[in-house]
Image (tube, rainbow, N blue to C red; front, side, top):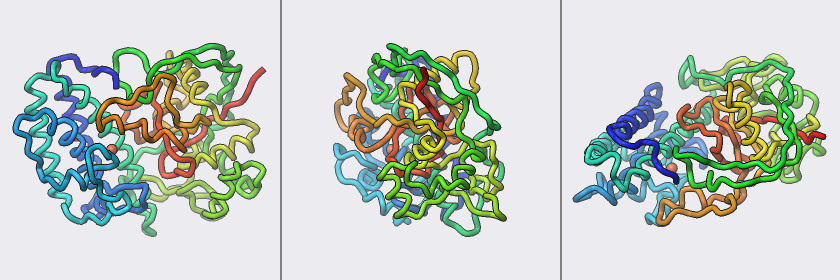
Length: 403
Ligand SMILES: [Fe+2]
């Protein structure tokens, strides 16, 4: 992790309060029952997200740096440990929905208790503490979980035949009508990776050189209208568009359309955080697996971009404007395997388990989605999921070779 952007005064303490309060605000539209349920092993209950993000501060900051540290409840160290072997035992991920105790009220008390102690630590020397980078990491971690809380709640509510809304006015990715244009890049020797003094995760480092062949990237994301055409014209039924593993996956799981699409009078509805709605043809197609994204690209006579192609293009095109759906619409699958950059180094201690150990069997997604906290998006950000993952707001920007 690079240095903190908070150099002094109470800026970090204020940021801490804002991020922590936002997590609690996210559950305001939910009942205690909504917060406790787990719809699948990949997703976690909202209550677990609230507790685990608190556990992160208690374990990595307070336990190390608070004078006379006493845990809020010692058993939470296991209950809300996600995947840190260096910390010890972990409660099994698929069983998070069985944790009816502690109740939501006690989890909120846990948050208040840790916040109170964190504030005391922050006020004791905001700029100088050696725990400062860990606090910043904890806040970035919490923002990641804010997005997961929403995608997990969307999946949970989609399993209910009443199709309840999380929030009637919940945002959907903004649409851009077809047709799209293409932006051309000469390629050559370019640089990618994080630079400057702001925060980045370790997986965005080090900045390094990459050679690109000439290429073109679509000026906008594939939208629902375009993806509906793929569906209507048999894209899901023709193995020639699909990777072998992808074809097996779609056959075994009987996948014939994007997750959350539902047939309605010859057209399509989609389940959104605002409930069931008519599919908006201009909105980006989202909740696609890597396999679906790749099959669509082949059908369209194109391919998925590499992450270097994406980052170089986004750096060029976001300098003067925010057009082009680079950020805030949908995560964009790249054909790049999630692997360490040349020279990548894992941080010492349990916190080194944050990213590095997941660098196998996953693909990188770039940009950010409609449910990513805006201050969390970055040009060099590397999100990653297995090829089968569909419950994130994941979409497609097409690429093709040029020249
Ligand atoms: Fe986490």
